[in-house]
Length: 172
Image (tube, rainbow, N blue to C red; front, side, top):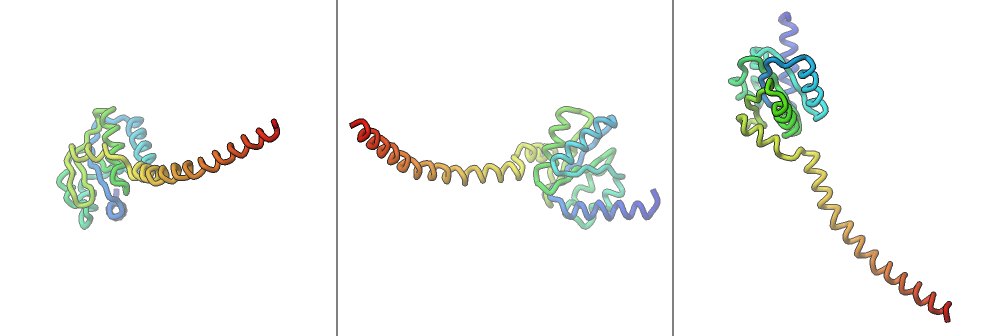
């Protein structure tokens, strides 16, 4: 990799880190190509990103971002998982690490807040932003559905009363 490619990599990673809310630092040693491919696929499906770069380049890319405190974690074979959703990358990494001991979570950061392994795991247990939105819509929609049902009930009862009177007149 020549100097221009390194500069482009650092600039691209710096721009990406400026746009995300969560970064999870992982170490993967011994992942097979298939396992790595499956991890990347799960990360993409969750709307997150996964990047393996040289630690020196990652440290340079972290400078000037809100994740600058992660520079101390850049030792060994590291990779970054990142997402705009404050939970997505953590969920995928924690879930994959449970199934495959070759992936280890070192730490992470949510904005400027540095997280240890337990912090990342606690974050992974939270519902995602989409799940919270769905619950909120369900809570807002439930009373409206109940009100509509209550309002329709008297009209239905009135129609049954008229029907009963109509059938009595025909019988008489």
